Amino acid sequence: MSYTALYRKWRPATFADVKGQDHIVKTLKNQITSKRIGHAYLFCGTRGTGKTSIAKIFARAVNCEHPVDGSPCGECDTCKNIASGTSLNVVEIDAASNNGVENIREIREQVQYPPTEGTYRVYIIDEVHMLSTGAFNALLKTLEEPPSYVIFILATTEVHKIPITVLSRCQRYDFKRITIDTIAARLKELTDAEQIDVEERALRYVAKAADGSMRDALSLLDQCSAFHYGETLTYDNVLEVLGAVDTSIFSELFRAVAEDRTTDCIYKLEEMVIQGRELGQFVNDFIWYMRNLLIIKTAKDAENMLDMSSDNLALLTEEARLVDTETLMRYIRIFSELSNQLRYASQKRVLIELAFIKLTRPSMEQDLSSILQRLNHIEKQLENGPDLSALARLSAQNPAPGGQEEAPAGGDETVTVKIPKAQLEDLNQISGEWGKIIREMGGTVRAGFRETRLEPGGDGCLCIVFSDINSYSIGSRESILTDLQEFIAQKYGKSLTFKTRLAQTGEKKNTVYVSDEDLKENIHMDVIIEED
Ligand SMILES: [Zn+2]
Image 1 (cartoon, rainbow, N blue to C red):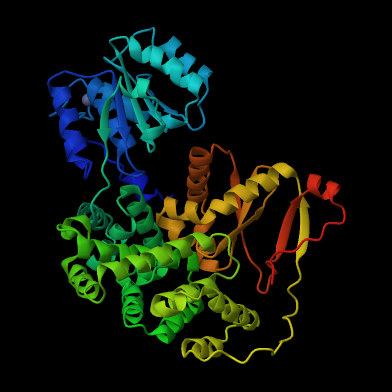
Image 2: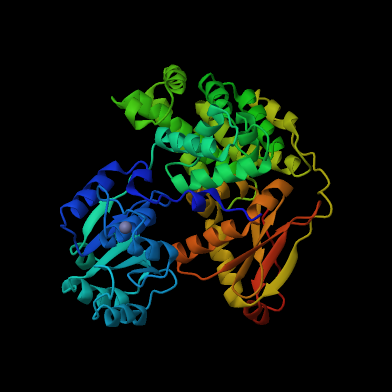
């Protein structure tokens, strides 16, 4: 039996099925019932908010022989032909892969001839910001004098990349992120219909993790129910599958910081290291947590700004009282700087520990060089594995006796591998942005790609190395790799493919890649990965 992903199976067929974009649906339906249809529409907003779905319904509705309250009837020949993909009246173009001037010229040729059946020919251009300048100019000419039977629907996640000349010719619709309530209600409806037994709390969590994207919500739910097929899907199952940690850790951590309990902070961090949490992500999540506290302290309508349950809000409000606004801002500043430093740091954990010490011992902050001095010492000790005693001593303001040089850890030598220059450039660029890419893609990727790294995978290909088998099995799915590929194409204009592998236990990570050209120039170069 073939399995259809929930988000494909439950793609809305009528306007009534579209959730969370009521303002847009209402306007479009009114246009259809009053027959005042425009020629160019621009749909903008984050991924998974319903842009393409609404565009498709609209394309059917304008052609439908008997629209019902502005929605396509789904019964007439035109509706059926469009739904089965045999109609020439609806043309979908993905500008990410068809972005050249010749692609748009082709459309201009086509639009000279009126449709043979139905009323309108509708062009849906997805990710329109990917068009080349030439293509935009060609498109503009058509938008300037559109034949009466042509409608363009341009969809984009990055409206700031659309030329103003094109913007000014379109009716613009801004798609909102969908609220947790709306997503949760839709998930409930759908799990009832699919007879998936699921805890209410689990659905809320998925809705929250999807961060406003219905599509992400459905693929996360898919992922969770696949793992626990035939059982009741519980809140704990969801946390486990999504690799998420309850926010209570942030609450505990924040209280420890506010009460200047340095040692507790360090131990909490140790806990997270043991749980295998990706530290860069942890820092960003903690910043976000403190940002919410700051909003509660400073904004009048914090309730509306923070989309969270009243229970959580009450808890946060109580926590926000522990420190004054100035102090909270200082915390956020220190952690933001930390977040930047971590991107290229090899000793993430030590830097985070340093930040906690800064937060909890402001008096020490004035004497940065002395901290660095102590830190160097700890760094050396930490290389041989987690040793909390040094930090505990440090936090007790009792620096460890110096001068004890320990033998360096064995088996950590650096391996140099040469690869073609183009591959090295791809690798460096994407590796440098990897954390950010994972964060921005959100959903499954954000949850499953923690603790991954990249290595060259051949021409135009990168290999994602997972250290955990669960994340590996989720992250290797084709749909996920395709999403990633599309994201990279959109964001960086690079056409890269991705493959995956699971890291071997004890595998060396100290591989340095150099381009074959560089190697030719510097035959005797010494490659050193980090300075000690
Ligand atoms: Zn119809």
